Structure formats: C-alpha cells, structure tokens
Image 1 (cartoon, rainbow, N blue to C red):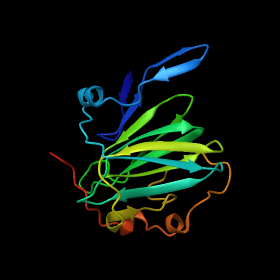
Image 2: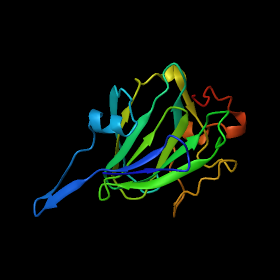
Image 3: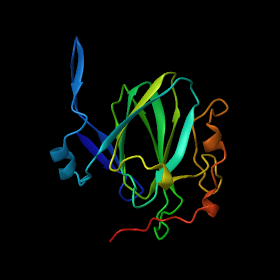
Image 4: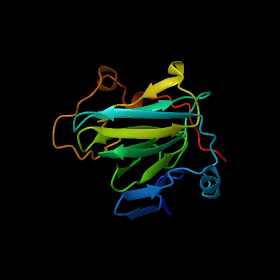
Length: 186
C-alpha cells in the first residue's frame, strides 16, 4: 500500500495493493487495523454507494456540521471521478484551499477526508459508481454545502462539458457566506 500526504493537513491519498492474474484482481479496500496504523482511527458507521450515469455530473461540495460531522474514505468502484476536498476549518492556514485526485476503478485509489472539509466530485466516465465510508450517520439537519464553481475556491474541474447538477447544488452558497462550524484540532 502506498500512502501520500497532500497539501492539506489530514487528507491522505491511499493506493491499496492489488494482486492480479488472468482472472482479474484482488485487493483489500479497508482494514481497521491497517488504517489505524496510518493514523486513520475513525469508527466508520455507514457506507454509501452512488451511481452517476453521465460524464460531467458534479455532486458537492457537501459536509455535515457537528455534532454529526463526517470523515469519509472515498473510492470509485466503476468508471472514474475527479474527487475534491476543500478545507473549511476557519482557523486553518489552508482555509478555502482544495485538493483533487482522479479515483477510478482501474487505479483503485482512495481519498481519506477528515471532518472539517467539504467534499465533492465530478464524473469522468459514464456510469461511475462511488463508494465511501462515513464516520457518522446521515443527519440532514446538519447538512451544509458550498458552490462547486466558487471562484474564491478556484477548483480546476476537468470538465469538457457543462456540469450536470442537482437544484440543491446549483443553489449552494459561496465560501464568503459560510460561517464554518469547524476549527483546527490540537
């Protein structure tokens, strides 16, 4: 397994080992013991699985506020996505900064996103399936979102077409309107 720190403290890019032969491959996508050794000591309580049929579907940027804040471990089971995390910890030196990585069924890569970050993705292939673990249960009363195309954040989305959005994501507020409930730990 290869693990890379990113330019945002707490975000990890993980590439689990795969073992292949003429039949396909086998890979361990999560082991609580192994991930705890990496510093990911979350108690994941919910797995989510979404399908986005069309290339250019954008979901996010989403988060849940305390007391139901979520850390996420994201991977792509089919197709490919550009996965993004935005730092929304108001006293962080990287507040409003983002990182993005391609996660695909082919590369098997994962992105660990701790609480305190907004998360979103854009589909790069049709029928892309996203599978992610969450450290808290879905709590709609704590939901928050940011505009995916906020120029103050400046995400360089690799889209060749017009983004396909939900009405909710299209109407999400800008970073300047966010009174973030998150702070740096420590």
